[in-house]
Length: 109
Image (cartoon, rainbow, N blue to C red; front, side):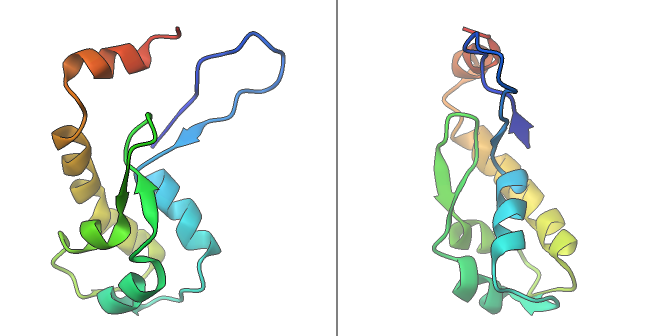
C-alpha cells in the first residue's frame, strides 16, 4: 500500500509513503534473500526488520507478522507477499486508532 502525503505547496513531485506490503516489497528487493525460501530463512534475514503498517509510520517487526503465517516455505517473493497481506491488514485494523484517525489521515490538512 502507498499513500501520497499532503502537498506542502511546492512544485516538487510528491513522494508516496509506503506501508504494509508495499514497504515490505521494497525491503525484500534490497535483501540478500533468494527464493524459494523457508520461513526461518526469511526470519533470519529480515525478522527484526520493522515495517510500517499504516500511513502514520507505525511499524511492526516482520518476525511478528511471519508468526501469523502457516506456510513454512515460499516459492517466490510474490507468494511471501501474498501470504503476509492478510496478517498486515488485520494488524493495521486492530491497531489503527479508530475511525476518526483513519478519516483524519485521508484529509489533505
